[in-house]
Image 1 (cartoon, rainbow over the protein chains, first blue to last red):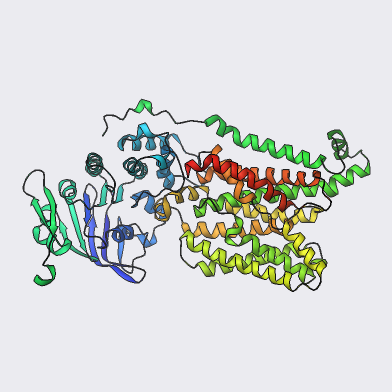
Image 2 (tube, helix red, strand yellow; image 1 turned 135 degrees about the vertical axis):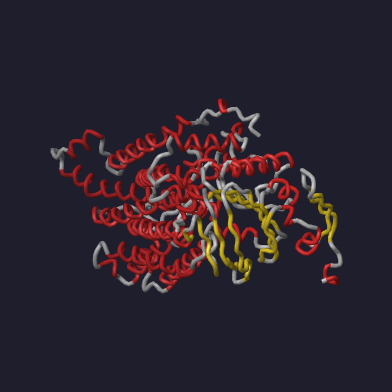
Length: 264
Length: 345
């Protein structure tokens, strides 16, 4: 079990305020989607709750302990992070990359043990990349690479997972796979937070949504509470076809909302 | 998602595994071979029985003098400097995630060379044999402080490279100034000769200067190899894996300044070893930055000592300098390697 409490969090990037006075609580067993237009502060928010970005004001606590007082290793053991972009600088094999996820558990001189290998193996099965294990990651397709990086985060066996746009460059089938995987992790007790752009995916799989706009948390709650035609217009500046009542909620963007300025 | 995952197919991928396991012992054997060759080859050839006789103490004084006063220090300095340069190159390529990185990128080589040049220019080098190396190490450390001030708190490798180029260029300009203003052609010649790099006529004093510096430097550089692996997924990725990036950077830069400073202090600036050795050993490993470190250290020692043997054996009218040989040796090896490997970049 792990709980992240965010209180009055503000953060800036290069002197520009990106996140203003944000408060929320992220709990175990919950898949939380962070949504909002580009530049809304989604990535800044997830980086700040991991201590990757210093908070300008406010506090972030993991299980009641302020992250400012936690070592990077303590945070890494509690929460795994999947950064945006799937960067990889060396042509490493899939298995080597996934094993990087075990780093928070290894001392500088200790060897990789059976337990670590088992965690790596399980992570590769969960992300469906076992058949790729000997391949070089830089030679894989974008979708395969995304799943390798996801397996890398899963291998940490952390109680929380924070994924920044895990669906980018995935085909619809693998998007569904990744969302089901994250939902399953949450059902099994993990605290899962993911930045998403696909609102249908967000509506369908997330237990809770955080809607950010220009650094401010404008709505928080179940997908049904957060997603509305009104918010699509005011936050995203679009019109869309929405069906939130059925068992499979759907949000399909239709066009730009043209009269945003005139109607205020 | 689980349907087509068959756990039985998950054999540990051990392609080329035996080759990888054999790498370190092979390189160690290589070090032993070049060390022995370096002891026995030269203008006066000493066959192995004569070396053994000299070591057991019951040999001719000539053999003993050549062995212990000339070749032993030279061999040890060659191994220390080569190992240090190879390791520093491997660490920097991993840390900066740049295959072009080598010890000179961050100004470590040039600034250490500047201290030595100043020692020659102002005549301080003549006071004592240790003065030149000590000034060299000192100026390497000053450059390190400058590098920290210039790079500031930024964690991006690019900022560090740019700051390093600034420091390196400044030191290079000061070296040129010393050549420009040198009081007589002999001083200029001496500076030039030193800049070309050589480990000829080294004494045990040089070994005692290089040894602690390279040991301390190597210890700092080898402190946490896994941090370099973590950096393969970027700075945020590495930090989210629990890596203390600031501490890593402090240790690496200090190790570089002390280790490379100590190496350059006794050998002059010797290029290419730090650049090419990691590239040569990388395909023989799993290519992760941590796996390249030790092989690069050993490979650097082999390459530099091998080049030094060539320096002694190639008959030329005026003595060949080691830095020249490593460059001529390095470029073709590097090009062949590059043509074969460029697919994977």
